[in-house]
Structure formats: C-alpha cells, structure tokens
Image 1 (cartoon, rainbow, N blue to C red):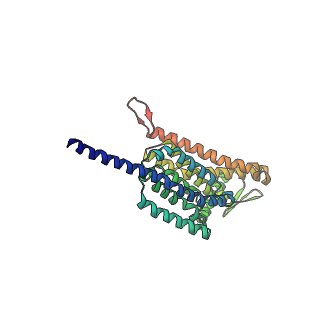
Image 2 (image 1 turned 120 degrees about the vertical axis):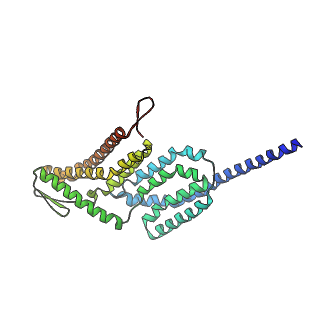
Image 3 (image 1 turned 180 degrees about the vertical axis):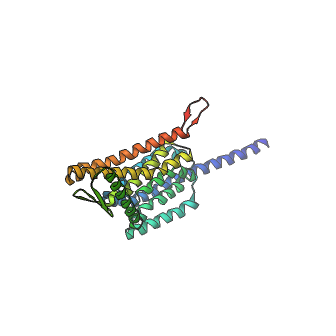
Amino acid sequence: MSATLQAAPIRASGRAGLRDAARDLFARWRALPLFAGLLAMYVPTYLAQAAGHWQTEQLRHAPLVALGAAWLFWRRRSSFVHSPAAVADIPGLPLLLFGIAAYVVGRSQEIPLLEVGSQIPVLAAVVLLTRGTGALRAAAFPLLFLAFMVPLPGILIDPVTATLKESVSAAVEETLFLAGLPIARSGVVLTLGHYQLLMADACSGLHSMITLTALGLLFLHLMGRTSLLHNGLLIAAIVPVAFVANVARVLALALTTYYLGERAAQGIAHDLAGVLLFVVALAAMFAIDALLCRALCRRTATGSRRCE
C-alpha cells in the first residue's frame, strides 16, 4: 500500500516536469516566427530611416541609440536565458496587435512616429510571448531607450525650437554685450559688427538636449544609482546643462565669425564647436554627478563612503 501511495506523487511530478519541458520548448520554438517577422518588418524601416531621417541634424543620433539598445539587450541576455519561460499570452497578444496596427498605419501612411515607434510595443510583446513578465522587466530600460530614435512630429518640435532659438539668441547677445563687442539682436538674427548671424534650427539646442538626455539616462542606468533624489537631480540638470553648452557653442561660432570671418566659422570651426558642446555638457554632467555623490553619499559600516 505504501509503495502505491508513493508512486502517485512520483508519476505526478514526472508529468509536471514533462509539461514544464514542453512549455519551455514551445516558448523557444514560437520565438522563431516572431523574430522572422521582426526582421521582415523593421529591416526595411531601418534602411529607409538610414537613407532619410538619420541623415538630418535632428536624428543623427538615432543609429547610436539603436546600437546602444542592442548592446543593452545583449548585456542583459543572462536575464532572458535564465528566466523561466512563463509565457504571458493575455498581455502579450493585445500588445502585439497594437504594435502591428501602429506599424501598418505608419508604414502605409508614411508616418515615421508610428512606424518607428511601433517597435517598442512589438518588441515588448515578443518578450512577453517568449519569456514572460520577468524577462520584460529585465528588458524595460533597453525598450524605453529606443524611444530616443523615434522621429517627433513638427507640431511638437517647432514651438519648442522657436522658443529655444529666442532664448539662445538673447543669452548670446547679453554675453557679447557684456564683453564689450558691437552686438545687436532682432528676433533670432544677431548683428555682430558687420556680420549678420541667423540662428538656425540646429542652433536651438533641442536635439542636443534629446541626445544628452539619452546619454544621461544611459549613464544613470549603467552606474546603478538607487537614490531617487540623486537620479532626479541629475536628470533635472540635463536641460540647463545642455542649454548652457549650446550657448557656449553659439558663442564660439559668433566669435570665430567676428575675428576670423564667415568662411572660418563655416569650416572646421563649426564641427569643432559641435564637439565643444558635448565635451562641455558631458564634463558638467560628470561634475554634477560627483558633487551629488559627495553630498548624498552614505557611510558604510567600515567608515568608507558609498554613493547610491
């Protein structure tokens, strides 16, 4: 009797093990058509973006965002491999249908916001349908990071760009006036000596702010800061840092034009000013992070300081 009673749990556990193995095998095999579908959908999209939007000043950072997201996925690959294959069909299927619908509308109507942006819900759905909610939590930051390569519509970009151009023009005018240079301003047109400088959209600094925000969030993610106050203050500092760095860039171009001529400012000096922007901004972000570490660090049991 006792042998019979012990055999039943053994058989039950054996059946449960077979079910788990079958479920894991099904989850692995179902990933193949999903990944094939991803390639069929987004390879043409990426090629079209590379020939179009990625050539513009606004989205020149998009290829780096895509590579960064791919690296982040690869960096978290152990979380995907070792997470149990708990397939989540209920949230995964509706999310997949929503993403595909956005892709179809964006592709057919030539709306890059929908076409490129659809990859985020589609990829999230693929993770849910193959590895489950645990893997989705591991993939959350790489998926959100992809948002920085989505082309934004002009109805959102244009008002912000116009406001930033006015602010940068005013800041440059005030700085050069205090320096004693002959400067005047009419809207976004600066008159410096006998040169007239038109503040172009690229000089607004908006796209630099977007790029620096992406870099700042990536930095915080890689550093693994756990302090909400630290992270919040560093994120809040991105916009003013980017603005000041952009003003420094425009000042450098204006001074180059004034002292060396317009041709010099449009040559290598223009490219160097762009490098200056990111050097100044990144240096400022590192400095702010170091100051926050000093101000918010905690002492450990051994007496050493730890930044969270």
